Amino acid sequence: MGLYRVHVSLWAYGSGRKFFSNSVRNKELEFYSQLNDWWSPDGPQKQLLKFNRVRVNFIRRHLLAQVGPSFTNSEQAMKSLSILDVGCGAGLLSESLGRLGTQAVTGIDPTPKCIELAQAHLELDCTGLNEIVKYENTTLEAKIEENEEKFDVVCCSEVIEHVNEQSKFLQDCAKLVKPNGFLFMSTIAKTPEAYLSNIVLGEYVLGLLPKGTHEYEMFISHEQVQAALRNEMELIEAKGVSVKNPITMEMQEVNYLRANYMMIFRALK
Image (cartoon, rainbow, N blue to C red; front, side, top):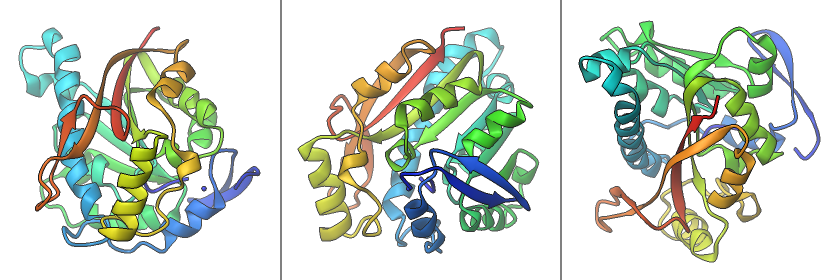
């Protein structure tokens, strides 16, 4: 969720080099460069922290169901997986996936400030997580151009609603998935109820997210996501996400897909 807002192609800089991107939007770079606190449970990203628990459980459950039978235990299954977290922001999902005991997690984001915050938080860990998780200030397009590696799992979580050329962006994510690998994505449906819950209530009434985080015209339906990936991916499951406790604002999986939702796919080849 630390990504990507330019309706023209963008040159950006990362790791001392220049990279080109059609998906990155200047507005996003500027917005996320101003966010300093991602990890505080009472900070501006407090609701993302609550959602993070739901998405990590969803990812783990499906990966163990799909990959687990080939291994003697769940620890070995998770240890076999390499993961790319596209638009990693300050590393909330990347660190959580690393703590599952995965082989390696690479988080990428075009916003230098996000990568600085992610790296700073990772360095606070004393459990060896920094041997599993690494961060790169780069774009999805640049990662594809490098053509160095593909991943068992590619995550695109709370990102697609912030990028240009959304169908192509999803297809580019699929390019980095190994044969028989997985693509996880989460985003927000383009519906009146999603506008009400995420923008009106979430940003302006309850203050669960910083104002300006979302734009309704960038929301995308699960049908559009599936259509974009129909030649690359097979859907395993789609689930909605909603608040289960209005006091604590803790979240849960639901069958309703007209607001926030998650999807996990398996590569067709």
